[in-house]
Image (cartoon, rainbow, N blue to C red; front, side, top):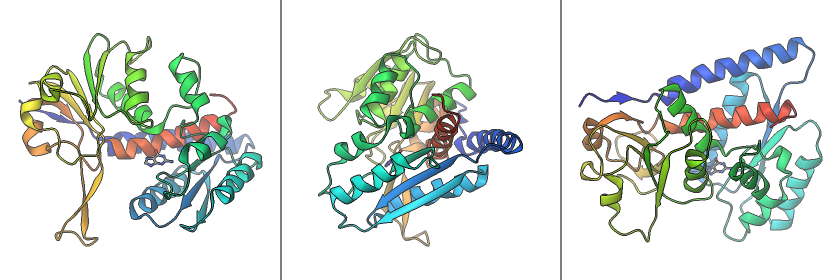
Length: 293
Ligand code: GUN
């Protein structure tokens, strides 16, 4: 089957242009530039790359950004104090604390300390809860980006069988709710699979839309995918490679070369969901700056 690549890089570039125009309009009206802050604790290589991409994206659309770097051995109280400062800083419209945090930190406690109106990651239980009942809320960036991609490619979700692999708080769980709730780009019949699911392949091969968010490289093989399915790959695991300068490359959760020929649409890794996550964060920050959700 001829498959079409879902080009997240292209869509995200278009969306960034739209955001940049809105920022220009704001500035012409004498309003301030939206300002996003990011807290990065420790030296995790992947987190560092993600945060650098976020800071760079801010510059591309005309946002201010502030990066707060804290050492690996920062105490929970010190992180809470940085969060409080950002909560109280009226120049900061929204901020994120990059995850994962070092093992001695209770991540949930940090997330719950973030003021919900500045929680542009949409991780606070208030935002998650509002999203569940269909109230305006910050929707976490990866699920938001995936829904935007489906919209851009006119991929209908209503009445479709969607299978989500993975039940994380930041991707699988919110995404399954977004796609099943009564709204545009919802109304799907959603099944979540996880580490205790039996006969995963049987379930995935019934999916019209299969979303892999497990963090297990090349988990999804051709025999697990229905002919003509839409496959969205959220995986971004760094694996060793002697072919790249950095010594690693990104692998998705889908064995692309084998799966793609069975699909109608498929996202690549990199260049699929990843760039959309960043643009969604920018969108949320713009909403925060506009004072509405
Ligand atoms: N770690 C992996 N993805 C994310 C994300 O979207 N936001 C934050 N804060 N940390 C992450």
